[in-house]
Length: 235
Image (cartoon, rainbow, N blue to C red; front, side, top):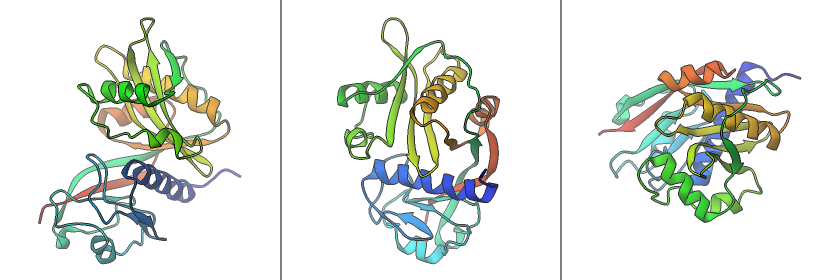
């Protein structure tokens, strides 16, 4: 049975929350949200809603708003967190790509990151400057193969593109898609989608993007699912 839009939205939100929990190594799940009582690493939210009916007050009470910059991923663009001292940081679009959809042939040599040293090299290429240890080695070993990092290298072994992927249930989330300067953005998606199809055949791919990155993803066979917002605490 082909999942409907609502099912895919719920699956995409949960998949992304599981990814945030894995990177943060903290927090817990309820039926309404994943929340971390301690501040999460840079770029990662302190909460991700799992339904459109999440209770705003309970969500805010479950995270640390005393430290600057607490954020909430409002997965269904359904919350009003302004009264609690938040403002919208950005909006984006959930996307999905049906299983079996053909991907363009990548030009680089693509493979999974095999160990901690390669993960440092991946993060350095992703960051553009240096690895900060944001993506810890436990991501490679603690999730039964359901979290992978993907690299596209040239003939000299340089990482020119990459992505991260995580499987939950019947979907695979693709995130942190990047290409270094001079490498087409399409290459990162082509390589990542080709590897994901080999690792998890038959599963729908989900994620979220905005702006030019959203346009690139739509050009690679993704379709929009629905809006999300990220709120940041400024009070």
